[in-house]
Length: 360
Ligand code: 9MR
Image 1 (cartoon, rainbow, N blue to C red):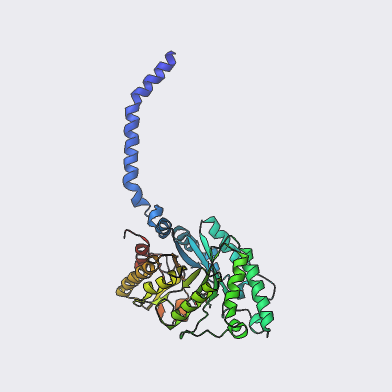
Image 2 (cartoon, helix red, strand yellow):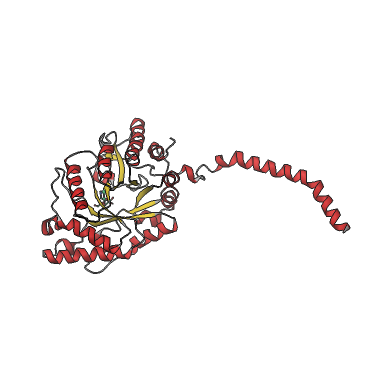
């Protein structure tokens, strides 16, 4: 017993001192932590804001950078709650020779996403471009092509059943004037290939949201009018179409003024809308005024989607200017993404963040 009381006395003596030390530590931590780790608060990342609004903020991901560039992966995982395969799920990548599938890069992305609590947008099942040559030059009949397409959709959507929340089933099916774009599918099968592809994809994964995706459809124009008419018709026929993807490859200062109203008319049909491939290119070298305008444009484009009912989210077509497709396609243009080549957040990042933050 004497021991117990001595111990008790010692505690009583030390308690004020311990409390003072603990209090000082808490105060120090409170004062210094935010300065030491500015990115530590999930609420201030892009994905923190997106999660708070129940939407996706995605990025297109290349297999090269994902597997070889640690800085890339750490920004991707900190900032984005959704990923799209930039190329790995296209037909030429998945089935380079007939019946021989190469899943490696696509599987890598899907398991990376699961490990980092990211959703996956599937891109893309039916497209005129990036077809393997055995398919493009195979001289197949309509009925053979139908079977090939169904097999490809069954196999690909089936493999990732439950792991892909949305699929770009049909990509870039229209010409600028609203007519159907000539392609292997359109030319041999007619426009009916679109309804068939949607039905097959739905059977293979009933939970995935199925999209038609295109570019230069963000404004109210001939191309978006044709897409609207097709969407309405497919819905009237009971075809499982759930969403429309607006790629949104813009030039600085040129986010279309009719974008929000245009997205809203699709949403009013009961469809989801998503910005699926946002980037905003600048003539190089980019001036600080252009970078500031780009920031405004990122905010506007994001708000144009999030301000519409049934906007599921915004995906940017890459993370950093280091790997963007833009300079290789639009000679003299670049700097289209939210991060510089060395992963500094650009004014565009702030614009995107403010577009996602309801209190900005
Ligand atoms: O960014 C992609 C690039 O790496 C590929 O070389 C290119 C091939 O067509 O496709 C790019 O992604 C496109 C997307 O799949 C569909 N919409 C336009 C995108 C930019 O070209």
